[in-house]
Amino acid sequence: MVDTATSSGDTLLFLTDEQLRQGAEAMFFAYRGFTADPDRILAGLSYGRAHHRALHFIHTAPGTTVNNLLNILGVTKQSLNRVLRTMVEDGLVESRVGRNDRRERHLFLTEAGQDLERQLSDAQRARMRAAFKQAGPEAVAGFRKVLESMMDPEMRRQYQRLREGR
Amino acid sequence: MVDTATSSGDTLLFLTDEQLRQGAEAMFFAYRGFTADPDRILAGLSYGRAHHRALHFIHTAPGTTVNNLLNILGVTKQSLNRVLRTMVEDGLVESRVGRNDRRERHLFLTEAGQDLERQLSDAQRARMRAAFKQAGPEAVAGFRKVLESMMDPEMRRQYQRLREGR
DNA sequence: AGTTTAAGTCAGCCTTGTTGACATTCCAAG
DNA sequence: CTTGGAATGTCAACAAGGCTGACTTAAACT
Image 1 (cartoon, each protein chain N blue to C red):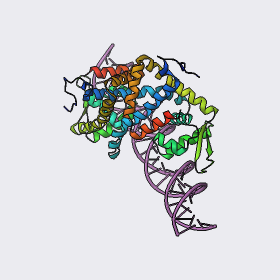
Image 2: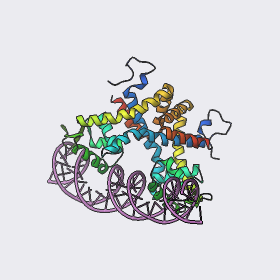
Image 3: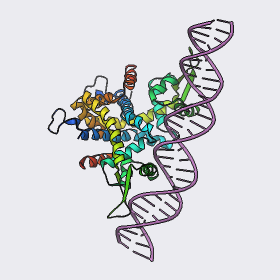
Image 4: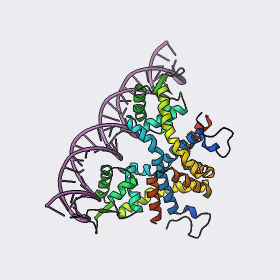
């Protein structure tokens, strides 16, 4: 009833509420698959998805500051700190005082931290690789295009900054 | 070093670890965008994302049983029950004893429940529609294809069952 | 010297995930 | 017909990980 496209539409057919609803459901189920493998690994250790996220982005941008990480992850200081503290205590993450600005702490993965990070992202990548392979290069391009369009402008900025940094 | 594709590869170039990592990050940021709008609405009320998920699938499959919903959502009984109970108390969801099997409860949205569901999914769909529009029909097809490939077989089954049911 | 900024901490709250015990109901085998 | 097991749903209690707000410490800036 609120359909954007008429049933006989052509180029607009994919924008019906029903199509959009299916897109949302696909997103929901796929995200569960996306996190399933790392979650399984983490369940054994006493870590959760929050630890994985932190590990991932410290790995991606070694030396990043706490504040920077807060912005990327979109959580509060307290929330991140809890997670970060346990990982520093467990010797997965190292926190070095900034050279220029000694108020800042720069974050790095230790050997052990890199090992865990690799273990987690290998699992995640394996699934991703299988999905990409099965869907084909053109589908992957479309996938990326839609995901980027779905981000908030803020996030898109950060996503692109991360991509450029490599 | 563990790259699947050589740097000079062609059809496989999109499967480098770096590309896969970017895919994972895109997924992370996009999912945040995907849930941002409903989350904003729910923050005002005393509901969370879990309520949204329940509303969505009860709307999709009215009369579904608690057990069925458990399978779809992939959470434990108690987790769902808490959410469900508050919504029944608040008059958003109706829970009717099964006619054939009186152990089962069949779930329906009340008027108020439908209103909230619509409000939430309208917000979500608006973003989705914009993203789909911007990315174009072919990108959307690819998006769906990749997401489907990313699901666990179990989930894919459920996803497809939901699609067929309409 | 006074203000601002980065980081960390504490207390306390909420949502949402978990497990385990329990009540009700159904069904099938004795 | 009864009884014992399986299925369904409810509840209590706990843990993880979000959140806010107040506060400290240290360093930098003006």
